Image (cartoon, rainbow, N blue to C red; front, side):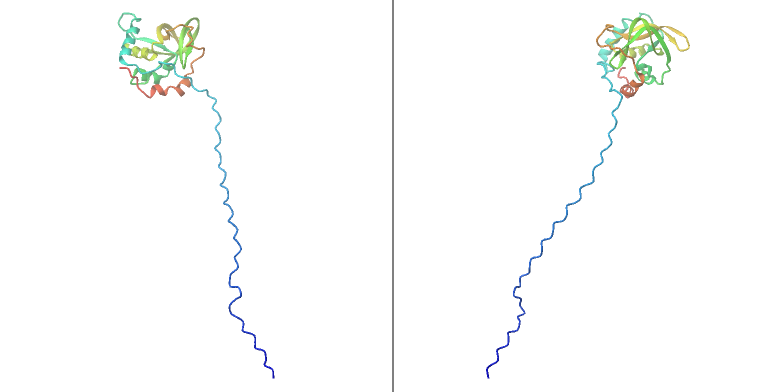
Length: 222
């Protein structure tokens, strides 16, 4: 009897190929979302107010005592050689503001001024400041205040600087009263000086842009 064929070997527990198949590559993460757009600030409309002009040279600059006393000496040379008597001043520029007048004169209280008008003068502008030019016709409105001491006039003359000289005028108040021999400061140079321009003084504009440069500091004069 022929021998039966040997049985097949038992299946091996070991796999033919024990290597693991590589996992499929993972897709990269999506990029982060873009940042939210920045909201631009609304642009402010351009100001319709023109920029202030430069301050004229020498306008309310500190004065050392040597120049101050020399200036007063030159000023007094044009004043009558007689004892001081109170008189009225006519203001048509920055000194129409009582607070400016108080600071310049170092007054303990706010001064009381009265509106008035003078004739025979016209206004020219010296930078931001007005000045008076004598003329045959024309009138200028402003305020009137009584000077009660020589030192007050000295301070006013020093504030106006040597660009101005004082002159006499008659001021007509709002109620019709006429104040004679009133004093006011006029242009000391030539009436047709190239430093002067046609124009008018805007008190509100001065108060808005320039008043603080005077009122925030006391007068440096003695």
